[in-house]
Image (cartoon, rainbow, N blue to C red; front, side, top):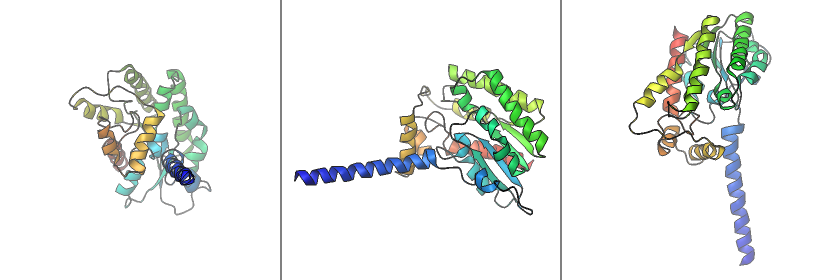
Length: 265
């Protein structure tokens, strides 16, 4: 009997570890769909569809929370674009600056959308350093390609818009808007539209409380139990965030709509 219990416990442990490993890979280890390493490693071949590159961090990569790039790809699949997802989990503006050549310019893009800075806010990267990194990214794309460029404002972090953290987000968004003006790029008001939705909620917002266990729990609900990102957010008492950082499908749809309108303009 004791031997059977030990075997059963071991099998249970193996199952739990296997499930945890699967969730971890799907949410945190899996690369974005059609990343630059696949789409652009050998350069763009003659006759290839015009490339639209979305560059950023996990919110662009789309494995934890809404995949707004994938939704945009499905929506505009008949418009003659190839969408390249250059989102990398955990990236800051400094990280993106280091991979501009391989992940953006190598794609010879017709259009580039940049959503970067949320991790800079969380890591307390000085505003001047963020401004320098973002300016260098845009300058390289502007000077070495003929691509249209759009800079997307950062979504709120958590849903308390009056919190100190979101006051910081506003400062970074001012830099993004100033950089767009400086380089004659377009500015897409992601933060502004998401904030309007949050203001319509009934009741006080939950305080910002991001943690890895919370993010892993959200991923487990989605990938292991099949719950939508909207359901995950709703279960946590949030309008737009699955874990205070990453957006649910409702929030991602705002970005998809703004990007689609921009590409069509």
